[in-house]
Image (cartoon, rainbow, N blue to C red; front, side):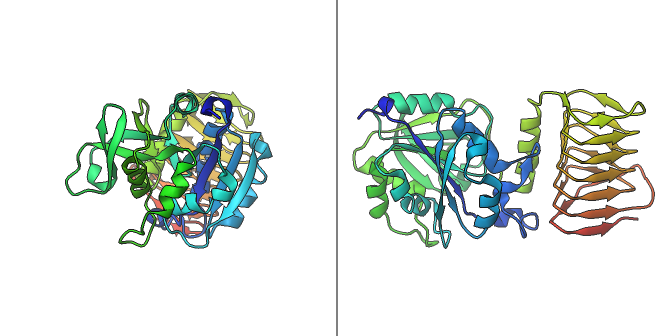
Length: 361
């Protein structure tokens, strides 16, 4: 049956440990870190369901209970979710391999759960649905291709892909969004583990190419961020907040000023404070005698009092009070306490994991 008569399934990988984001991810799943007050994984699910892909499999690992509790059965997204447990993270291709029973003979989108693609995947889904090729691999030009899987192209056909080459054949990196038909499972069975003991998706794609299958590549036109590092998380938060639609469902008093694109979610309260958007303030969060600067997201059930914050991400159940310097370009985890005593005209850049406590001068 041609692809245009068959619905695609979605396969999301959410089993990684997030070691590059430590200490931010010591006590929680990296895919559930909230960007613009919505977990990264939810942004990926949104992009799939926006294209009518609602039959989803999620590969989970050590943090499976957290992911399951957050996503549930998928009904909040208008989707149906099947969980696939991966006892040990043995590579992206291994995550695909163990999902074969879920995928069956259907074509599917493989989406790494910590990727942000600003433009969405709609046109690539349509291209794969209506095309006759066996795989479609999305690419993005990067400054340091030696740190990525890199593609060599002949027109739009992929002829070679190499994992982290010392001498890259191009600057086109393979990003974490792929389209496959059922041929991929046979290819994975014939791929050997790499030197790091993993089944590499780049080796799998190369096997499809070597088998003479039609593997196409498309260079994305929008912004892509792999949220694997602290600066990447802040950049992705910035990227999402750029498109923020103002919505004041919470409350603010007459002594407060709200400027620019600001979202106050249900139950949020702003008292005697200045909010300069784009900013999103989460449910039941209180902002008191404070300045919240552009490109900041503060999640639910937080308190920020007598403090200045800008360009930062603050996760749930955190209290920040009387900090003497402006907090900027910072990642602050869940259930954190930051307390100070006086204000001075300097700034802090912080990366604080969950349940941290910091007392400033």
